[in-house]
Image 1 (cartoon, helix red, strand yellow):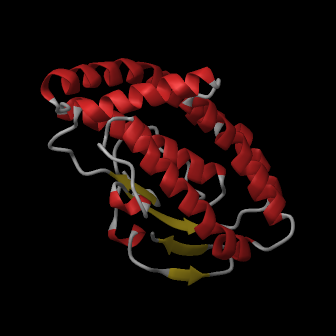
Image 2 (image 1 turned 90 degrees about the horizontal axis):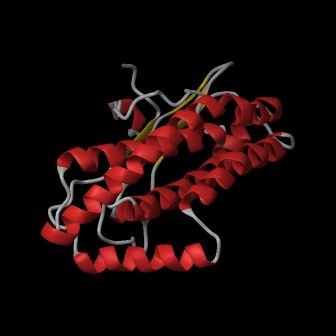
Amino acid sequence: MQAHPVHFHVPFPTRLTRLQLLVRLVAFVALGILGISFGTVFLCAFFALPAFAAVRLGARSANAYLADDGPRVAHALRWFAAVSAWVGLLTDRLPARSAAETVELDLATGGRPTASSAIWRVIAGLPSALVLAVLGFIGSFVWLWAALTILFRERIGRGAFHYLEGLQRWSVRLLAYQASLVDAYPPFSFEDTHSATSVQPTSATTSSTTATTVHP
């Protein structure tokens, strides 16, 4: 499979504590009382990012958008990934200063996005989002199984971990696509198709493509 410009990885935890599991459950209850869910946040981002990109691209070139707005959007996605990793039982703590404390997310931004192409991604991204929703439904049962293993053994099985990590990887790739940071459509796969070119500082500009790696 060809390397994807979005690389996401979380180190496998040797121990996940019951205390942090309880903190998650309390947070879920509190957010539920407010009518907020993680799915709702993702859905808002799915539609808001193309709108944001279209507005910004309507007033500037693709190069300027990727150079100026790209790092800020990537920073937000990186924190989204870090919080998602904590919620998804991939890590036992939230980062204090930088999302890179708990997750690795590299984005090799590129392409020639336009305002019209950004809006079109609301439709183009739906197939990936629908498949992700089905996998996320299955993932809720995987999450419950993982929570039980943490409750009794303070650890998570590798199978459950890789499934939940794959869900997070898919969601971040989709949001990067929705934000017009990358042209590559999110692959229908949990695999991390990482390559050296996606994490090395590169900048290439041609008549049709601009690529810039965004780091923490």
